[in-house]
Image (spheres, rainbow, N blue to C red):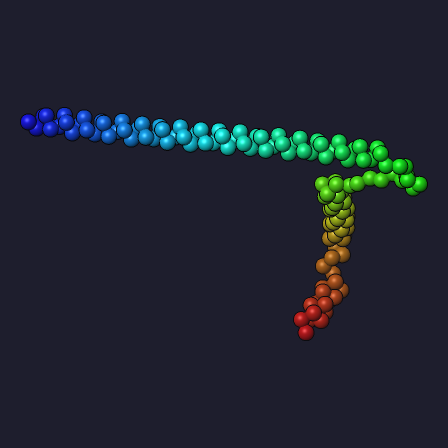
Length: 137
């Protein structure tokens, strides 16, 4: 008897497992189907935006062609934000290099003065002490 109950219990558990597996599979299939539909709609929206952009560009070009020439035809350029950022970075890098070379010159000068024994002279120590006293008091 116990063996029959055990078999029935196993069969019921297996049937529940199969039902849950089918439900999960069905639910996942619905989700995948929904995601595919959403991607298709997104693709359609993007394609429509591209079509509208091209149509606007064509209209703008036609309007420019149909405009009468102005008396003040001057060349113009537009500098993008990205180009401005790049120019600023280039200027900062150049300034940094000049700072580095000035620092290197100062270090070289101090090394020479130290080697010549001109840094720790009694006069230099007195001047440093007087500057410290002036700053603190």
